[in-house]
Length: 204
Image: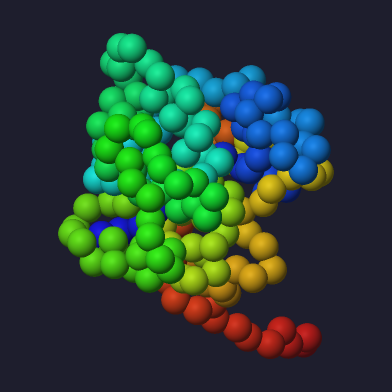
């Protein structure tokens, strides 16, 4: 099973609080809500396509609680994203939750890296991570990500949670597709391709 990470980013790599000022104020973050001014039908269509390929979701505790409190509370689910959010199996990585109530959800037990590696051996579909800054960074550190859908918005935030930290495993990336929407949002799909090549620059 292919593991993909899909996330919204600022130009300087921040992924915290994209959906609203109060979505994630942890660490004193006060700059949330930077996605919607640039969100359009083109980006919505891309995300619909991503969710249509999903066989299961893999979520960190914070993103799980945000999604369960919004998508999980809808009485009528009609959009592609809403249907997928509620119907798909959801694997939740958390060291603080004892139970998960949202339908089709289950907590990952034991070592997360080992559990995710086992999930990837479970079929030929797509296991998707959305948001989940801590989990996505952890997966990058352990070399478990096969593909990144990085959706970069034309804003600089200066502070907040970032996707890649110093512990990220050095990884080469191959471009699968790149596109910029009419509102300036850059959609980059990258496939991981082993260790990066290195060369020494020569001055002639």
